[in-house]
Image (cartoon, rainbow, N blue to C red; front, side, top):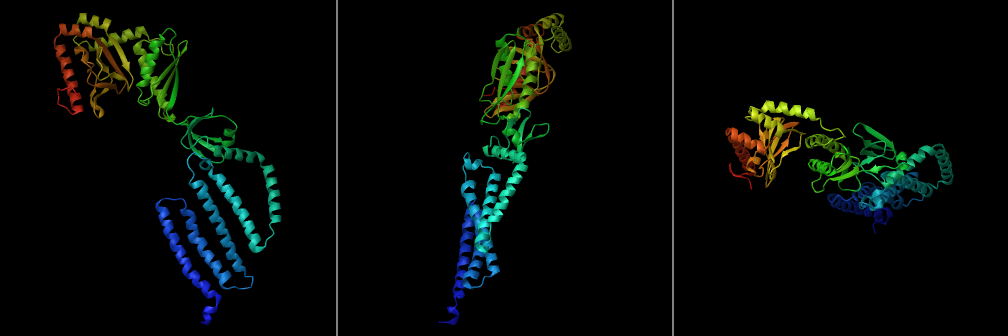
Length: 470
């Protein structure tokens, strides 16, 4: 036999020279496959390939290939390093197995990261203590006793602060809220923007409110985002006790249903509490729409209550002011509507002035208008129903008509929505007939408006001008 081959280190060196590259190549291929699948096991395998295997090879080469009887310090140092890396590898593998692949809703998914880090730190310290005792024959009993006494002293000195931290950790473990949830603590309400082991940060809309977790752990609060599903905005309103409850409830329901932020598949609700008190429930997609919904609803309700003669907040419409406003409007539009002295007086008796908030409907497609409205002030957008949904087809300005289909008693072809605070003069069908008899040219003007609306609806539907949309 060749003398060199008789040496033990030669076989160890050969085995390491062949085996280590093969192991590294195999780990590289496995890591590549798992990385493409975005598997969390990539991290411990990277630690195994980049650190554990090379250091283990070095330990094997030093400890076994040399077969030295001497107690070499640098061999112990490398062995300690290998032991530390094995501890990290074991903990990383446990973290992947227990928490990284945890299913949503399980206790493993709810465990806060800080809990995992604390346990990991404790295990690393215990593992290092055992490692030093095995490799270096160190006496760790005195160190453990010292650490125990120190922990007791620090715990007694910081028991209030520690209690708050523990309370915060328990809140994090329970996870009664998450980022993006809307909560109401009684003293503040807003959206959760940050959660840590010490405090909760919520955006109230007027600033950032920081609430210690210990305070949350010792008090009750409402999570407005749970359970998942529509959020109900509750709006209390008051009318005069003399207003008929069924009329008020119908007005409240129709006003709430017309809000653009209301969920179409869930109807609004109205509860009558007696003495003119009502509660309106409006379903929206999220609590973040609460303030916007309340503002839009109350704004539109003011206009709607005035149009129906109801006393919102127990304040009845001013009859004298309404009559003066009607006389002023009729005087201003008398020439445009061909009102002579007789028709002027008839208009004062039969017409009424109505105001609409932005976003309210002046008229709806498919509904036969009960009267013709003359736009005195404001603006409106016209849309036509098509197979693609509502399509914009024009705009209305001062001096134009809404609901001219009332003359022919046909369903309206377009929908008119106010885009600004709008005032209209409502002309009953009987008065329209009197004006036409006295001034036939007015019939031509209304007919031209009807043809224009028909053409607009046809263009929106992709049809031919003069043909009603399908």
